Amino acid sequence: MTSPLQQKIKITGPSVVTANRTWDGVVIYRDAHNGWTTDLAQAAIVRTADDARALLAESTADDVGAIGPYIAPVAVNDNGTVEPGNLREQIRRKGVTIDLPASA
Image (cartoon, rainbow, N blue to C red; front, side, top):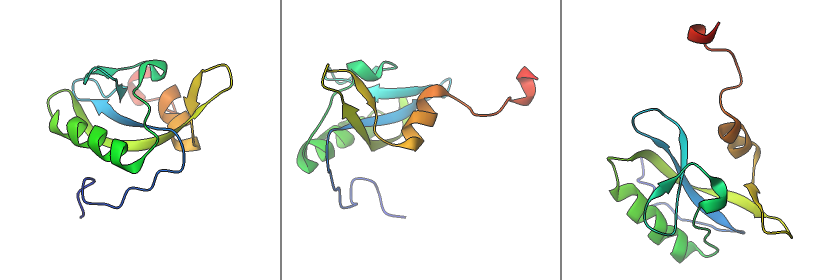
């Protein structure tokens, strides 16, 4: 399997780096201060492949706080709000789509 850092990165619009927090699996986003946030509005937004590659590299190096970082598209609305840019990210942001056995 090819490492995410070795894959060809194609950016077609604003993007963020997202992952899951290691201790509870919550969706997190890389912020501009080299940390992680659960708030998409606080995520560092990149617009070029080079910026995305750099943000992904520093995110991948943080294997204590996050697992499985990757680049995800976002939409920045006219009023500045940030929304997930595809269906997968919309689902991840809202959480599981079925009742888990523990919650039934």
